[in-house]
Image 1 (cartoon, rainbow, N blue to C red):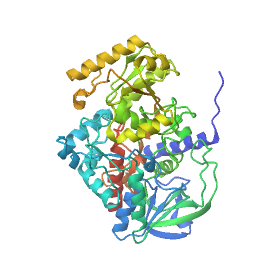
Image 2: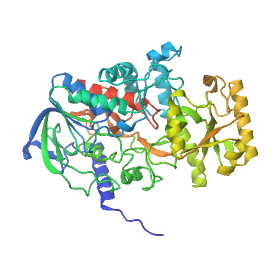
Image 3: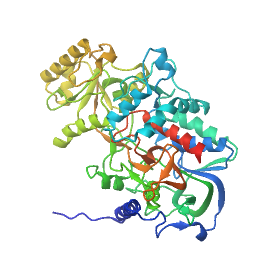
Image 4: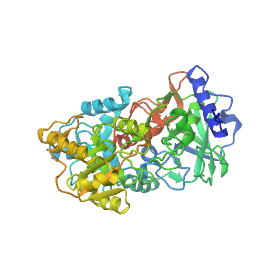
Length: 518
């Protein structure tokens, strides 16, 4: 057997995890590699420094600035927004106005119950309760910052949610929040965003508190590296003081091909991902090195609605979530049979798809439906998906079956069984067909189909925070002075798997809280 070599980057990752482990076993926050305040000269001084410009980072910066604090937001990439700007634009808000208008009953308790089911019960409930209690406030804050949401359509029901509770931005993209929020933040007095400025390390005082950061300005991200940039030394080194503290909002690490593989060896370095290339682990690992408690690091969510026929997030998730998953079916092409509840939580569906792909990596499942199986707000995207050849159109079931080499008789039997179930309001896999008012796959075409391929999408794990967004030490079990965190860089909130559209709510809510409390 050929022995795999551990690269320098892998060794650095393992070393960082070792430091995190020492912190949890009782090491002090200040390790031998810690940068101490007494040993540096600060180039610039601020009240608050925010790391990251996604939903969480911008919300934190806005709230801190509105308190009269001088705020610096650092972003390592050339553009703001991270994963947030390419997010699908859905925000889960229990008991929202649209639910009331369309007679949809919801509650905080039901929202939390849904999240716990998807998260396999390992969620930190106090964080979910905080999100539920302030979700509407977070939504209103996004609107205050200039975000515009669709208010002429009922809310959508994402997989794993018991009821429709997700509102969408006007442009069905996270950019509908990020762009106006960036403008809002940059317009606040004493608040500044700097791009191509990479956070490298925390600066600590002699009591283990965070008092600043080291950065590299003029930094250039190297997209050819598989992991965070251990071998990228671009930029000019500077040291910034944060008198009130630092807010870590650096996002997740789904694009960090080395670190994610260390957590889940099933994820190959060549596997496509929905995230932007800068979604790496470096900032989170630095927090571990100063003693932050790691939570749920090995739980990496795969997006079950993605397609192998396009790179990244693309158009397929809109077509599946707003169409063929909701009203149509997904089948195993080898036998023409359904194999999952197409509206289950993401982990359940991704696991079901992987069972097929592990048996035959070439047997990508196919999801399909007819013209009636699309929400109105995704019709325009359907045309884009067809033009890009991500979605294919067929006049008959026979033509669809022939193209994907699916046994046609078995496929027709699966359609009939599903349609019979929707008419009765009962589905063999527990799909909530009653919600869809018996909407079936029509006997007459055209039929729209997409091949499925799970892709790393959201990392459940990160640093442990409390309900005040303070980062908790693995040594003392108390907050690390001067360090707050929000968004995907934190762990515990979503447990084993996050429900779709809860990320925006999570990030905005705890970003606000961090900015309010620091």
